[in-house]
Image (cartoon, rainbow, N blue to C red; front, side, top):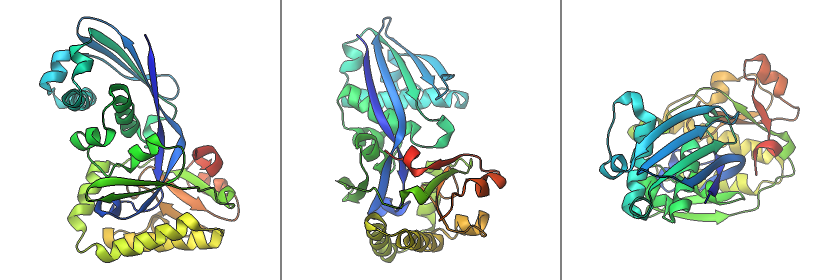
Length: 304
């Protein structure tokens, strides 16, 4: 019998990095995501196949049940297989039934966005596995990848969320976020893929006392989430960038790459990587294309 699970992708609009320290963050689930398809097989093996958005196979491997149970560690050249083994090993510790009560599986993953976009290839996989095995996705994340978990909240919810860690536990508030000015918002792909783990490590190394920053970011998040005017929204984005620029000791993305842009550009997630948000009176697609950034997605096509 075939079982299919689906999880939404994600974009973190406010609170990048400081969400780890308890700041309130605005996050939006995307119209893009990932499917997980489970079929029974045999020989105590998992035949794993991962498809990119265009249908091409970007990973295919066979994994034995014993590799998962023993958490086999292969050479670095097999880093994707190692990651899957690690996730499934932690899942096995949370619910062993999927190995002890099965003879094998054919597992297929299907992204509905190009995997290099950074919309949550890992988080959607973890959430899908948690759905399949009926385990806590946040626990599985903590034991495998780590991170704040806001991406899992987006995977599980079909509306905007305010996400916060309180005593290391996720608190999720679903909100209505469909601003009248959303036609002025675009998402631009920078093609500067960054490791979330490395970005987080760098942030933790730099930060000193973070309490004042968290208070400021919480206030900005509230303003952005409740904005009814494009100017108010854009100004709050700008304030957020300036605040995080001080914390990270880095120039804002607008200063670094788009200092002549007529509008506001804000980093999302790991600074300088993947997507940025742009808001402007006029359609900015040509502006970004002239500078070599050909993937410009309107709000209505990106956000669920």
